[in-house]
Image (cartoon, rainbow, N blue to C red; front, side):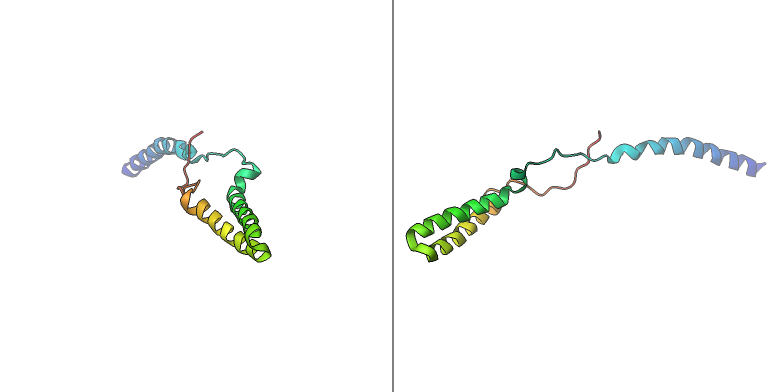
Length: 100
């Protein structure tokens, strides 16, 4: 009789607990981002390229071909400095999940 009663209580508890815990599966929905334009994807490269181009033009005006190469290097370096150190556009964040 005790075995039968214990078995019945265990089955009854499982019948109550399983449906209550099954509803928490929708807590891990993912937030979707809207698609980015080509400019937004390559913004950093464009900033560096503009710096290199401006440096090359100024270097060419001042020192010819050799000045253009030096100016392009200095311009690319300043573009990198601006993009990644002075004015970073994105911050590293942890992945965040939102419910739908």
